[in-house]
Length: 428
Ligand code: S3P
Image (cartoon, rainbow, N blue to C red; front, side, top):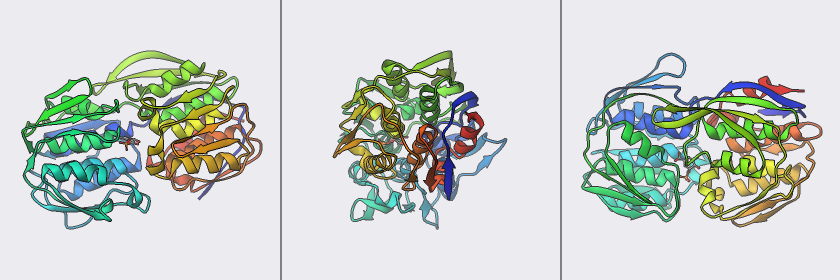
C-alpha cells in the first residue's frame, strides 16, 4: 500500500498513546506463566504484541480481549504450558521470538517457532548460546536464524556476561532463569531497558540488582496481577519530533511511559534545545509515566555514541530525520545493531534520506546527517520496517511536494493508529 503525505503547517492537539510494546510483551508472557488471572489495561495494539498473545494461546493459555485494550490471561503457572501442534508464529517480532525462547527452554516439550521474512534474517545465536548453556537444545537455520526448534528441559542457572547490550537477550536469560535450579545472573555491558525486571517484581518475583548485575532464583512463584501499561514513548517520539520541527506547534501526549531506560530520547532532545515539559508524574504498573507538552523549538544537533545508543536504539530512525533540521547535523556512531533490526536501518535511512535530497554520510556503525537541509517529497521504501515508515511520514510533513511511503501499512507492527492520529493532529 502507498501512503501519501504532504507538507504541513503545524501539528496541534492531545493524544493518548497506545500501550508500550516492550512492556506489553513482558506482561503478556509473565501473565501466561503466573498463577491466576492477570488483567492488563491499555495492552499494546501493536501487531507484534498480538503475535505474543497468539503464541501464548497456542501454548494453551486462555486469553480474552475484554473492553478495547483490556486483556485477561488465565495463567498456567510455571508447569502448566502445553505443547503446540502448530509452529508458533512470531510475525515480525524479535521480542516475541527471543524472549519467549527463554520460557520455551524451560518446558518439557519441543516447540517450533518462526516468523516473517524479515524475522527469519535476524540473528538468534545471541540467545541460543546462553539458553543452550542452561540445558535447552535449540536448532536454528544455519545455527543462527529462525525457524527455531526448542527442546526444553531441566535447566541449570548460569552467570552470563552479555556480549551485546540487548534487553531482549537479558530478558530471555532471566525468563529461562525462572525455570532453572539455582540463581541465574546476567551482567550487562551497558544499561538497557529494565522492563523485565520491573514486571518480574510486579508479579512478586524477587530480583536482585547490583549495578550492572541482575540475578534471580529459579522456581519462584509468579502471582497474577491487575496492571496497566503506560503509553509507548517510542511511538510518542514521532510526534515529539513533528511538534518540535513544525513552527507554531503544540501537542500534549498523555500517560507516556518515562522509564529511565527509555526516556533518553526526551533528555537528548531537551539538551539539543527542544521544548518538552512533563506536566504530571504518574505511576503505571510499576513504571514511571507522565503527560508531556511539546512546543516548537530549534535544535542544535551533535553526536550520539557508546552507551547512549542502546538507550535510544528504537528512536534512531526519527532522530536521523530530525537531524536534517538541526543547526549542526547529527553524527551517530557505535550503532551497528541497527543493521540487524527489522531492516538494515542504516541502509534504509541513508537511502531514503538521500532520495529526499539530504546529504548523509554512511559508516559501518552509523551515519552523519548534515543539518539545515531542505527535504523534497519522494518515493520512500519502508523496507517493511514500521519505524522507517513512520519516520519518513514525519519527513513528509517537512518536505516540499508529495512524499509517498511504499508499504506504509507496516506501521501497524508497533502503532496501528499512527497515520490516523497523525492526520488528526496535522494542520495544513
Ligand atoms: C526491545 C529491545 C531492543 C529494541 C526492541 C525492543 C525490548 O532490542 O530495539 O525494539 O523490548 O527488549 P535489542 O534487545 O535487540 O537491543
